[in-house]
Length: 318
Image 1 (cartoon, one colour):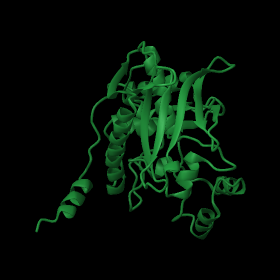
Image 2 (image 1 turned 30 degrees about the horizontal axis):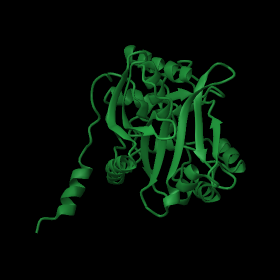
Image 3 (image 1 turned 180 degrees about the vertical axis):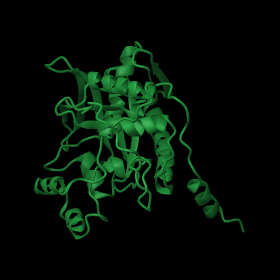
Image 4 (image 1 turned 90 degrees about the vertical axis):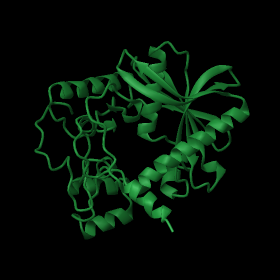
């Protein structure tokens, strides 16, 4: 009897090489900028992006679970395409787009009509584990917390709208659809609608709309993210690549004791995580998740491609 599951497991555990060579264009799925409010990083780490382009060996490659959920995401996207077709609003899907102005290339999940306005809009489909309380609250929100899309997903939708405008596409809205892969409740599925908004300071930032629990449309502008900030950080990455210089890290693998205490007092770290850190600060490090899940972050033995490199000089980025 051929062990199908064992074969699948071996296939999923096989190395997933990072594409080599210089990237042809910046991509919305790895969008990044520095916050216009406090200069803190938003989105992809510039060093991680650089190392991917330069084909550094991954010390923390994508595992089985991540690969399986990635493939599951494709199935959910196909399900959403079929729903749009049944609603009679489907136009196209997997639409490739290239913006020569900012050298950006991407693939839009779904193009569809808005039956209320007869205008064309786009949809980016994401799936998440709605049975996880923290994941669900982070997106759907709670009584004391408004619904919030993940930074990387918001940046991605914002980038697509910039690209559509720069290529002459009359598309003003990008819908970000979160689908609960656990199928725990239909109400764990959530929709955001993003558009380009000019702020009082003449910056272009994402306007985020969503339906509240009573079906009313609420909105806010994420002024941390700006078109100028995205373009400037992409140019910064280009400069590091052209000069073959290793960029500084945007995130921290392990916070200082002072920072952990400050975050705990401001309730940005749970008591459970804090108590584990107090028991063993070395084993139970607290830092940015961006480093923990980075392909160049620590493996199970603690080795990290990124953190094993000689410390970079101060390039004056932050």
